[in-house]
Length: 377
Image (cartoon, rainbow, N blue to C red):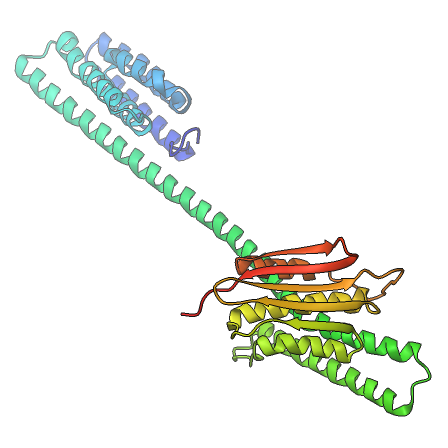
């Protein structure tokens, strides 16, 4: 198919064309009433064979065959050449001119060479005109139908390709979201478990009561982490039942995060300047920011002094600062997912805010998020 919607070449069509030309040539020879009628069979056969090249050279070949057909007066060549041109040409004016050429080469030669009377000439002209008009109309209809089917097929292929791309993008986005959710849920508590276990490891002189307290904290924190992880996996399994969802974090949970880290042995101070009620959606974003900041402190700055500052009021912005003194020579063996800060950056950006992280001039590492705080309606 060289052009959009152009006809394809089929073997059965070529065989049918050769059969029609052969039958017309044989009929011309059998019914020949004179030597001229007999000799017209030769150009008729040549023109029929030349029609086999119509797929490649149709623009100039078909008009030439129609003009030369005035010598053979072949009805098969007249119909096939006219129809073939109409199915390939997208210019109606050129198609009309080729149709007029077909009428002229099909109706005029009988008057000149056969010597028919005026009445026969008029009837021949009408008959040839009807045959050419039918061939052109059929060809144009076939061309329009073929182009429409090709266009519909192309659109279907594009839609299928676009749907596949959209599905792949949706899968990637969902995998990223799930990984971020699991990181937010599990990483904080697992870091607390690792920190408590490390404290037991480096303090062999703890009395029995202190060991029991630390072991109880490890057990409770690990159980909570496993429970939350089980809930996430239950949602992912999708067994056809609605999985129970844990309550979403509130503003009180933001404050409770600091208390949990303090109980775990982190020297962290809370500077809470929030007196108004914080919307749940804003509280959830703040919770994830504080959680990720404290998780990183648990992993990388365990023995340094940290602070959490919460500032803002409705109609302005909520400012969240989680910082710690840069540790000197402290190393951690806790693995990092390398997606915590990226995850909270996505959350803050979706909330219309901005977030920065890095060392400050006063020797601290700070995570600072600024999120719009809309006025309650």
